[in-house]
Length: 335
Image 1 (cartoon, rainbow, N blue to C red):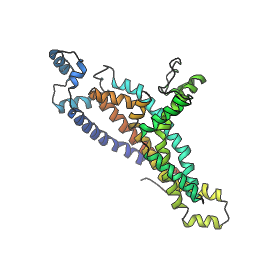
Image 2 (cartoon, rainbow, N blue to C red):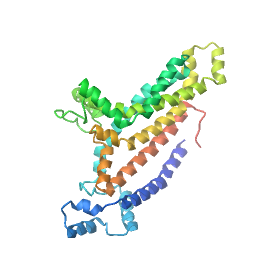
Image 3 (cartoon, helix red, strand yellow):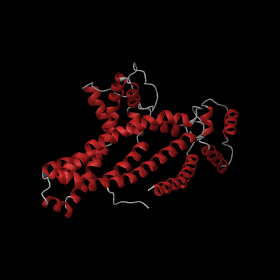
Image 4 (cartoon, helix red, strand yellow):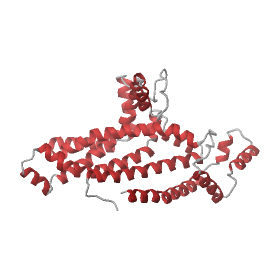
């Protein structure tokens, strides 16, 4: 297992290099002038050229890329062209917000989607199965921006029980930064009022982002349970007189959850790179918002940094998913 993990980690290097090359080339093909954006709207031609020379944007693309890789090896993601701040520092501020939102959305997907899939896959009622599958399809097909606006209209506009946007109320101070995830940091600091306020702000964006994931997890788990419940070893377990609950928990669920684990791993990776709409609807201030600003301002170091971090996170999650397989099914062994 250790050799497999080390081999996977080594194989990440060429993938990351390929991603940086592709992102660098595509970023430089975007219409617009990064030097003009960095110099400001009212900059003169001489000022723009001075900024272009200072940032090295007057050099050929291979030279620019070589300098970027040289800094990257030292752990330097460069400086934002628009804010003049270190990209590494800004990612450290924005990424935890997205991670908190993604974890909350996937927690909803796991806690709701898996039980629904298990119950419908092993259940006998066609009406319940049809109803759950109908709402699952509805959740998958619902546009995320529409769901977010509906939730805001209902829970803020009509019921007024949840906040409209943001991560904390204006009168609430953020907890001492440890992870920069407000709910976690508030728990660590024992600030229960801050925790509850952060949790209330987290509900709507997590629900908006998680509703499609609940549907996907429920559908995959349902299909897998239907397949597993038809296997010979399930009939054998029932013939031995095992209770239905024991048949489900000891024999069916472990094997049925393998495809679900794959889905969850992929969904986490997609969530980290696909929160842009939700973050803008709820003014969440995560990596999606940061990416939008970077693309809008042609901030190439920001675009490169976000792509690199998102890709690395996706690959690490996939590796953890493969490792989780061995716990669900000990017969799986990686060489």
